[in-house]
Length: 357
Image (cartoon, rainbow, N blue to C red; front, side, top):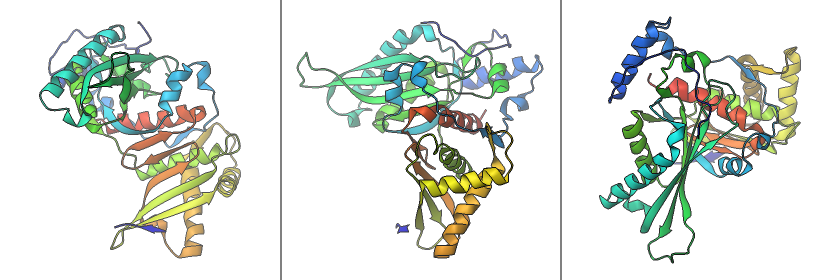
């Protein structure tokens, strides 16, 4: 225990609207009014259901469909999560223009003293690019990667610019009813992942908000979704060793106490597999919430027998395996591209549920 003190696929839409607005609230109000006439009500736009079952993860070589260099970028390092509301008048055909606009915006903000934490860079280059092949359905918009490069102030002209910030917006298997309800002027990429100086992250978000009338918010991962990740990753062990299952709970004690519980990968798999067999699973392609709950209860019961600590009284805050890690504060690392889709589907769902609209 540890103690602490180009034109690409865009979302399908069956709602036609010609309303225009500079304000996101007005834009969204027009969206609600328009969709109401086509059989949707404002409540349906936000009443996204939390699923009680999910597809069991399957190993998938996505490099057959996605550029390997782009995949390598996504599985590199830890990402901080945010949600972002639908982008108004975003166009995939204008990515080069967006790159120039954001570059100019960053320079302008730096001149005003708002980006001084970035360092003494002399210039910035922004690159927008599309990740083709990551979308799971016709309703999903294609993923966008943004990279910011800079050259030190006294660097030689032939010195290569270095990437100082990276981010991407994605939607993987988003709720189809919600996505179809959006007017044509909106593109939904609800999951925003960023890595780099927080100052640059704030500037990037500010540019998006001004340009596309959208809103950003922090995206944490609650205990239930961390339990889902622990279970789904454990289920991957026979195909791709998870090496270990590390779980961290925060206990409501004074002073606060963190409990770190590391489970041998084979032991975790045998417990998971036994529960699946007891459940008499007839459809191996899905996992339900009851199985997840029983798996966590089994781990907690084993820990209690040895240490007399009831983990169910605390809050699960972190899950780590060789396939990836996730923290309740909204930090995620994808360590294996073979199961990337499984993680992004769950995080897309979290982002859609967290949005205020």
